[in-house]
Amino acid sequence: MKEINQMELKFKALSENESFARATVAGFCLSLNPTIDEITDIKTAVSEAVTNCVVHAYKNQTPGMISIKTTLFDTSVKIEISDNGIGISNIDKAREPFFTTCPNSDRSGMGFTVMESFMDSLNVENLKCGGLKVTMIKTFEQKENKLKKLG
Image (cartoon, rainbow, N blue to C red; front, side, top):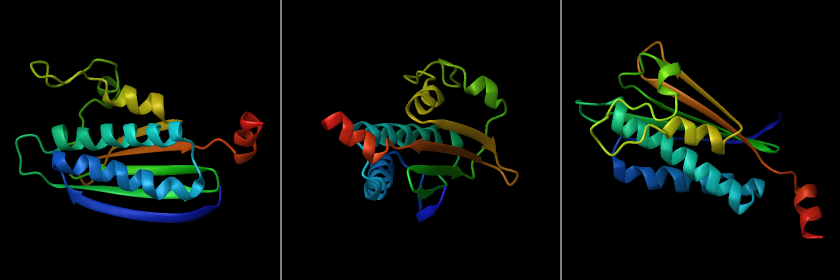
């Protein structure tokens, strides 16, 4: 895979920044000519990852920062979303559908499941310095395949 472009974005872990993050990452991917469905998948996955940071990373603390590093390759994008929050004590359990640490709220526990279903790969890891990093990869349909569908 040949890297063709990269950007980094940092913002405060506030819910009002979620739409900014998803629109920015989606807009950055447009140079690869993704389909509308592919852009929607990216927006949804980024939205879920950022929302997880906002809701869980800085629980009972002053909101910290969220970092997004987006790397474009010839036919794919890698999106790394990280925070310096509390991390997750049991990542495997947290990735189970419907698992939530907030059972008395409107949280469904489907964040990682949604990310995984919309992206081609998902990796979740606690950072040694504290916090969490979610790495997602999406491969775009090749332009030749798009033309075949039109013809």
